[in-house]
Image (cartoon, rainbow, N blue to C red; front, side, top):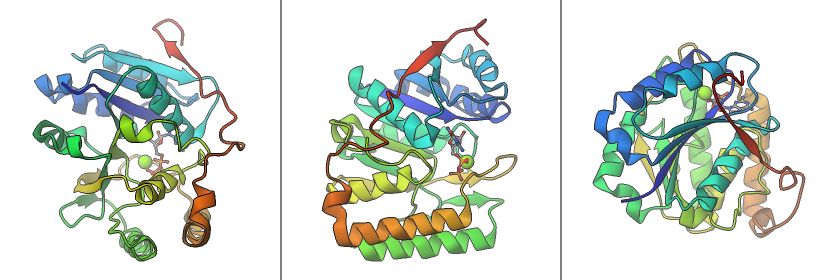
Amino acid sequence: MDKILLFIPMYNCEKQIVRVVDRIKALGEDQNLFSQVMIVDNRSPDGSIRAALNAVKELSCPAMVVRNLENYSLGGSHKVAFRYALENGFDYVVVLHGDDQGDIADLVPLIKRGDHRNLDCLLGARFHRDSKLVNYSRFRIFGNHVFNALVSLCTLHRVLDLGAGLNLYSTRWLKGEPYLPFPNNLTFNVYLLLYGIYSGARMTFFPLTWREEDQVSNAKLWKQTTEMLRLLARYLFGRKALFAPRENQWTRPAYRFEEMKEGMV
Ligand SMILES: Nc1nc2c(ncn2[C@@H]2O[C@H](COP(=O)(O)OP(=O)(O)O)[C@@H](O)[C@H]2O)c(=O)[nH]1
Ligand SMILES: [Mg+2]
C-alpha cells in the first residue's frame, strides 16, 4: 500500500478546520488511504489549533497538529510538510487547504483507482470543464481563464489551474527539495507548477468543487498579477537560472515545527 501524507496548511481557520476534518471523517473506511494527517498551523492568532486538536480526535487515521516555529507563509508550510514526508518514507503528499474551500472526497476516487501511481503531480483544477465553482465571481473566473491560457501558451502545456488547494505530489519528484528556493508567498504554487513542467513531471489536472463562503482569500489581485507576469517572463527567458539549485532568502529558514498537544494552547 502507498504511504500517503495528508497535509493541511492552516492559518486562521478556527471555523473552517472543523468542517475540513468532518469531510475527512465522512470518508469512513477510506480515511485509511492516508497513513497520516498533518495539520500545519502557521502561528494563527485565532483558536485554530485548539479547534484542530479537538476535531482530529475523531479521525480513524493517525493525525497530528503541528505549529511552525515561525510563520513561514503558505509556501513555507509546504516546505515543512514536504520535508516531513521525505524524511519519513512517504510515497505521496496530498495538500488540502485548511479553509474548507475544497473537499477531499473529490480526490479519493482517483487515489482508489490508482491514478496517482503513474503521476508526479495530480492537480485540482477549479477551471476544469467538469469542476463546480460555488460563489465565485464572473470576473474572477474570467481572469483565471485568461491567466491559464497565457501560461499554457508560454509553457506549451495545457494548464487548467495555477494553484488550487487540493493537490497530490509524489515524493519521488520532491526528492532533493528543488522547490526550496521558491518564495513562500502565495506564488509558491505557481513556481511549483512551472517547475513541474520544466522538470518533465508527469502531471494531470482533475475537476473539483470549490466554494467561497466564509473564507477570506489573501490573494491580492494586482500583486499576484504582476508577480505572475514577472515569473512568466523569467520562465520564458531564463528558466534555467530560475530553477537552478541555489541558496537565497527562502532556503535559509529552518522550516521547523513543534507538535501540539492538548493543554499547550
Ligand atoms: N494567507 C495565509 N494562508 C496560509 C498561511 N499558512 C497557511 N495558509 C493556508 O493557505 C490556504 C490558502 O490561503 P488563501 O488565503 O485561502 O488563498 P486562496 O484561497 O488560494 O486565495 C488557506 O487554507 C490558509 O489557511 C499563511 O501564512 N498565510
Ligand atoms: Mg483559500
